Length: 473
Image 1 (cartoon, rainbow, N blue to C red):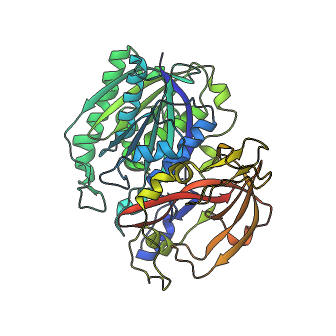
Image 2 (image 1 turned 90 degrees about the vertical axis):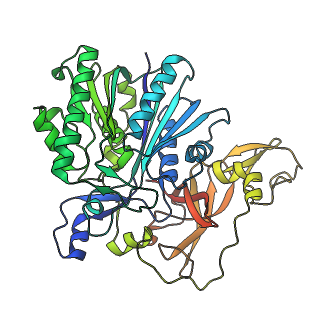
Image 3 (image 1 turned 180 degrees about the horizontal axis):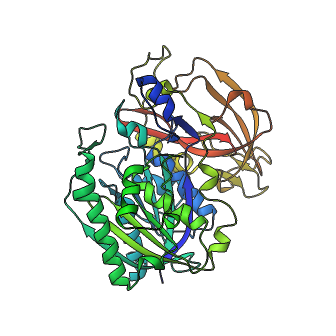
């Protein structure tokens, strides 16, 4: 039977305390914090990080990648293709975007399960990520957080079988955003709950229970999407659910992560699940999808290392001013340095393996790895001087040691000062690279670094992605 075979999660290390927001606007900010994507992060970079984490935790090489999001960086260009390239999937992988609804994550999961059951794919990775932006001084600014989750669906080494599913669509307008809107809008809360959310969720759960011939008491954990804490608690009361069985929605720790929220909760539930436990998972948005999952003995292997709990506590708190700047909500003084050169689509195509998956070369004679310089491929081995005898070598998955670094106070960045340096990879190879997600006073020569896929800059509406180095978490 088809089911979940691996899960990976990415939550940014930055946190914006809700009290910080409240202080700025002279009101109460509420408790907890929201996870905030860094100045060089977006839906695609977070999705790449989650996908790589999923693969590292035992996910099989997938022949399909479905990206679910409501905040894709491009209006007309497939983001799933960028994620698949950066995660080093084969070209034969079927890539597709699921978007325009908060239920995109659940819809992608159902499509992946159907594809595996039908035999059109052996393993499909579903990646859900969102960086939704709330208007200043509004409710969404308090509640929305950023994050990503990746789930592989297959038939081998299944940790949770997808026993049954049930879906409903509903043309109900509660949360929406047009192509011209920067921020989501919402209808009045009581109207949303009484007419839309609560009856839709109740109907889809009852439909699944009837189809699967189960009762709500048969489930050890119940996982479902909600816009906020109030709405989440409202469904618990309406269905008279055992509060001990209801999964924490993680709102206090990271906020509502949109299309990724429900699957992040499911990942948290599986982190503590036991063999033979049944889990009810419900995704919501323009209707609902409900799933009945049964945990297998394989869950013990998956639980050897935490997948969600170790990422909930952020390591770097940011100010409200930083948040507004990173999200482009306030104008800031432009750099006086010359503008960056325009991106060449032709050169990006030629160097795509280096840029997107961070490939270099390895000498066939002596085995020395060497990193290509963009626009200038290595032809002579630095170690043995053999000419044109190389094979592809991947650096993105290698750890590295910090050799040296410099702090640039004038570097045009939304998170000054800029930090650049040199890293030496395990096994050989050296790269001059920009650093991110680091606190300058904690940087030390020889500290262990890892590579992370990030936004560099954009010109002519083209986003230039590349790899940066960051301290190992």
